[in-house]
Amino acid sequence: MAYTPKSYKSKSYKAQDFGHLKGLDGISDAQVAEHLSLYEGYVKQVNALNEQLASMIGQGKASGKTPEFAEITRRLGFEYNGMVLHEYYFSNLRAAGELRPPSGSGLSRALGEGFGSVEQWQADFHAIGEMRGVGWVILFQDPATERLTNHWITLHQDGVPAGFKPLLVMDVWEHAFMRDYKATERAKYIEAFFRNVDWSMVERRFQETGAIRPAA
Ligand SMILES: [Fe+2]
Image 1 (cartoon, rainbow, N blue to C red):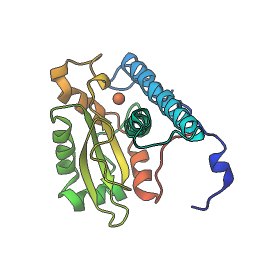
Image 2 (cartoon, rainbow, N blue to C red):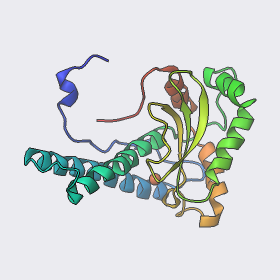
Image 3 (cartoon, protein in one colour):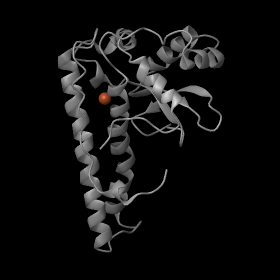
Image 4 (cartoon, rainbow, N blue to C red):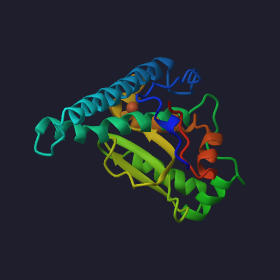
């Protein structure tokens, strides 16, 4: 992608509008609203950390030996991915979704080739979602080989394969479902998640070379 100066016009991120997420099946509007406000907190944190770092750099205080500089820099990965992964997550959901991608779609064929069948891919994705701990399950595409793999991401940033393209993102932090389900009912939430996937969005992410997510 050619660099254009306007890419840097806005130095801060804006929380995206996910107003389309009303009336999901098995994930209540109240749950979504609470989750969206948490997402907005990540956007604020990213902007705040970037401002703090810019200020330190401007004052000549950027030093690996300065605890404050090091801590803020380390937190960037957590806050950035907290923002970015939620943008992927919310934008791959919609009301009245289908349980699986349409048979014959590019994604469906690729999942069949990679996992034996779409059902087997889905069973694997679901199983990863039931792993203990908080994190994310992500179907990634390796842009170099086009191979599809399911990954567990601890917290927001640990385990993300560098440069891989997220196709389907599922949040399995307890805050994603505990208004609607008990902590022990994560499997029910995962089933609900699959009833609300926007497969047309996942297919677009699969087909297009660049990453697709709402951002500004
Ligand atoms: Fe979340």
